[in-house]
Amino acid sequence: MSHSTMSMTMTSDALLALRQVVKSKSPITYLSNNEPTSMLLNATHLSLGSVSLPKSTPTRYSKPGVPNAASPSDFYTLEAIYLAWLLRDAPGAEYMKQARENGLTVGFVSVTERKNVVDWLEGKVADSDRIKPLDTDSTTPPGTPSRPSPAAHASSSTPKRAARPNTTDLESPSKRRYVPDSHDLEVVKRIQVDEVELRDRNTVLRGVKPNNFSALLSSYSEKLKKSRETKPGAVSVPTPSTGPPMQARKARNMFPIIMISSSPTALITMYNVKRFLQESVFEASASARERAASAGNPRAEDVIHIDRRRTPPTVSGTASAPPSSGAIQRYFVVDSTDALQKFGADAWERVVCVMTTGQVWQFRPYKWSDPRTLFHHVKGIYVTWSNDPPNPKIKDWNVTELKIDPHRRHIDKSVVAHFWKIIDDWTSANKPWLLKS
Image (tube, rainbow, N blue to C red; front, side, top):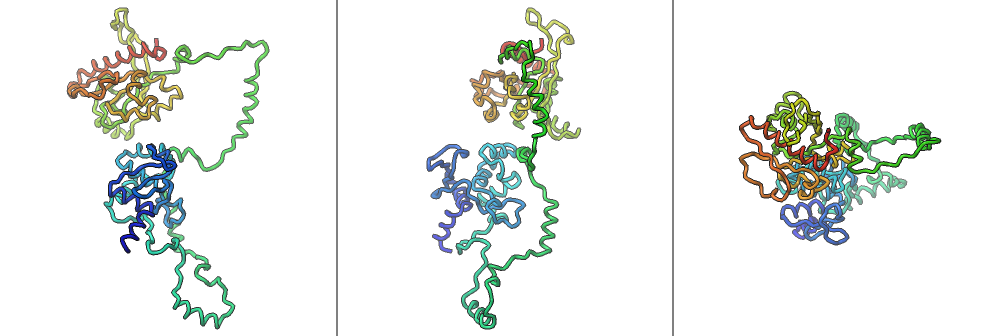
């Protein structure tokens, strides 16, 4: 194959064009109506060097579980292959989340397949059995039966036409019906029995069968009609307005929420937060995780409750009453916005504290993604070792440092007591309806 033919093939094939750009480390830009855009979600085309291709272009990389891929839906799109390479270093959960945010609710490269795609794009592997071969020497679509040579056609067709003048076109190989091999069918059936389809939360919730709720609606329509009718002599009650007074009336069903970082390197995680805040004992996250796994709990809960007895302060501000005299205050601890959504639409009104490790990516899915704005609505706590140097990133974040000693566990109690005093003071001044009197 000549160099010009190979160059033309690489620019016309989406998969080879992307691989060439990745290996040459050339920039990849997004286009929307031939205009550059900064977001992949808004883009319609990907600019790969000298060629611009629609991001929905099917590639030759087939999806798993498709033995004889032929339809465009059997192959990954250019966008899916590009996202797998772009997010090659992201954790699995973050990768799937970013894929859905960029519009790929389905059809993205799986986490287990992502490394194979990246290795091929970067040239670490020469070929993959999942890539359909590219016929660079012919423009005939894949699957078209081959035509016999003119000599063979002349030698074979002339006697037959002389002996059988009524031969029809049905004997042509292109008209002959394909009959699958019975052994192959049995093998495919056995494979399909053991096939496991990977699903995520969105595909499970989507469902596969239509549900008709007309019977349920009709049974409740009469009750709804009666509830809307005004009874004779009844006095209409004005709808209460929202805000702190309304939240104060709902306080018995509301508890404060503390958000912590989901980073695995954070000092306080979902594995050790309960023992730290409720028992005033700091345990390394790795040790707490191993202890939970040995007890049969390999994964941490996404929502943890903390029960704490608040000591009522005296007039001077000191807690002189016995510890058993205060009310039990319940707090909930979460480390993600997905878990926070379980508390309803007004969940952020109940967040009183956000523990941070100083990493800005923690706040991206939050209601306020800018830390300077976030920590004007909630109390910010920066958890660090007592012997760590100051972090210059947090100097204008309006956060309070909570220093944990790496070795002296006997001072954990005073550290936790200081934390609760900070939270009580901030909550009393900003969201008092969340505290029990």
